Image (cartoon, rainbow, N blue to C red):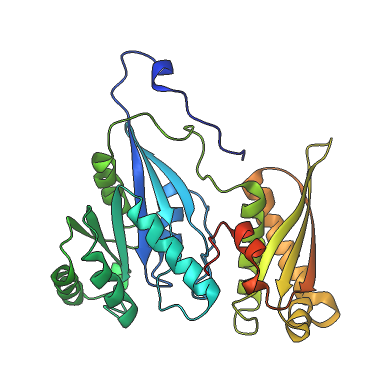
Length: 314
């Protein structure tokens, strides 16, 4: 996997080809609606972390899919919820900013939960956004058809959707249909990214996200959501391998003990799982070193927001 580079200008595109199309689709929804799972399914590989913990996605992650002559850039936004802390506000602002900058907004609803309070707030806010909107009802494989039809009707009463699709992000059911639809909705123009690139997430950030996923999966109930991971060193070695040094930041000594585990068992398991996934994703041998530090009130530090690609809310 390599970093993104600009796509050739229109003048460099070979003559005789069909006109290309490219644009952005913002995936928005309540926390744990399945946006990251859907993004990975649409792109065809893992570009966004998936855990059972709510509000896992903190920044906008772009995944690129190609359908015929169209390049579709899906933007996985943080889950939209009622913010209570500074970090919450930054995430929600990022989500709505990503939605308003896209060509199409795709609203994902967990059909098993229906229109919750969080979903209702999203649907109400969408009434003020005048742009193409698509409704995606997720988990249709475990939801009765009558409930799906009723849910689609109720959602369209809040705001008019151009189309409604019933999908399963986990199995991929229905995703080919939405890819074809979005491909037709993209504006004509040159592709925005090289054909062989699946995401614009910097490798250092993706490595940190992989470790953060393994951290949450290992310590789901024990570890507070406020913890974060930063990549301190990315060093290419002569043998083609990469040395990566990372730090897991928590806010209290008690949290540090949880992450380390008895005799370092937890941090060893987290590091091992993260290293294996990085090697598969980056197609390189990875030497991973993970440290744990206490940084009190890190969520009030503007520099930490910059590291995560978020604006610091005042």
